Structure formats: C-alpha cells, structure tokens
Image 1 (tube, rainbow, N blue to C red):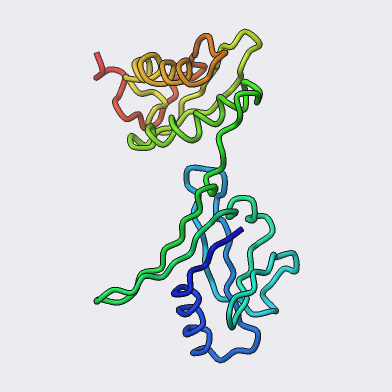
Image 2: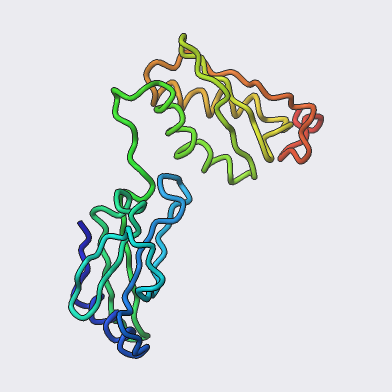
Length: 198
C-alpha cells in the first residue's frame, strides 16, 4: 500500500529516538484530498493523539499511522529521504491524492464536476476567479456561475466560449453547450471591468 524507503525509515527513526517519547510514531494524512489543492501532512503522533481508526504500517523501530479517511488517497504513496551535501530532502509522492478521474461510465454530472474542479478552476484561479456548476440538464447543457475575479469580468464571455465550453465539450462526451447563469452586473472585483473590455 505505502512504500517507505530504508533511508526514510532511518530518518524517522533518528528523529523519533531524539524525542525519546514511548510509542511515538509518525502519522500521515491527506489534506483536501480529491481536490486540486490536495497535499499530505506528516507529523509525529503519540498513542494519545490517535483517533483509533488509523491504519498501522509497521516499520523498523516505529509505526507509521495512516488516517482512515486518507487511506484511499494515499494508496500507492512512496516516501523517500535523499541525503545531499547540504542536508536531506524528504519526498512524498501520492499519485491518488487529488482523486481519480471518473470512468467513462460515470454520470455526466460527475464527469463535468471533475473537469471543472481539476482543470478549469485551477486555470481561472490565476485571475482570482472560479466557476461552479449550477446545473447539468438532461440535454447536456451545463449552467455555470462565475465567481471571484470572473464575476463581472468583461472577458467572461470569451472565457466561457473559447475556454470552458471548448474544454468541456472536448473532454466530456455528452456536453452539448455551456451557458452562463451569472448576473455579472453584481460583480464586486472583476479581473477586467466590463466597461474596459470593449
């Protein structure tokens, strides 16, 4: 399930021995799993810190605890410690932490949400913006609401037609059109004000 290199185990053992606390181990958990912001948290844990539903990975001289709600996201993770002339570098690779794209057999709604959250919103975040899916109709029409810097932006129509609609229609079979359900006149901090986009 998780591969912990010998050098990483030696690194953890050294740190744990330095603390000299009985039963001290290492706890690994996923933060914001299944999202583009997903990351891992690695921390020391005493037995009293554990919730009781963690999965235990026995290592040489200590236990690595996995939070139960993180297990599916950390499956296949690799932890390594690389020694360098300037010190050491701990590396954690968790290929499933951001989740897995829904299968082609998943519902149209699931597939649309995945692309919006994992491909479209990370790009819009560069301009302080985002979109949320309001509705996906039975006919394959996706209704979106723009937020952040995209709410009231003078380039929202271009973003919708040349960016979002093109992406969704090419990557999600079944999407027939993408529409904007946003009242752009109420935008508070548009990336490009509507009156200057002309």
